[in-house]
Amino acid sequence: MRVDKSKSFCISRDVEMEQLGGGVSRQIMLHDDEIMMVKVVFEKGAIGHEHDHPHRQVSYIESGVFEVTIDKEKKVLKKGDAFYIAPNLRHGVLCLESGTLIDVFNPMREDFI
Image (cartoon, rainbow, N blue to C red; front, side, top):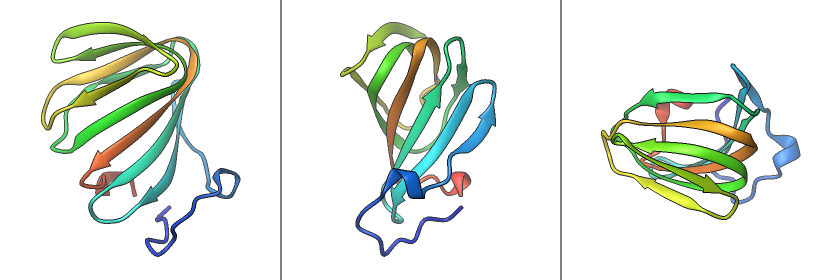
């Protein structure tokens, strides 16, 4: 689902939640060509498998507890914590307590839409 780039506001209940499988779902909140905000909801035990991409990413833990791996370094992060991923670094998460990440990408992730 492509979000209308002319929108300045996002009402979460009006945006479809995409089921990715394995206890993970994604909601593309807002974007233009340079930036994208995505809400990712994880059930306990769900995995965001290790991967890399050319985008800069900043993620905020809105709720839950996650084991975050960035370039082989692991940290357990909780509600209110955040992390940064430089372009092309391997990273992934394991959800230890059900929760939600708010991911911001630069440039936007064309592969998500």
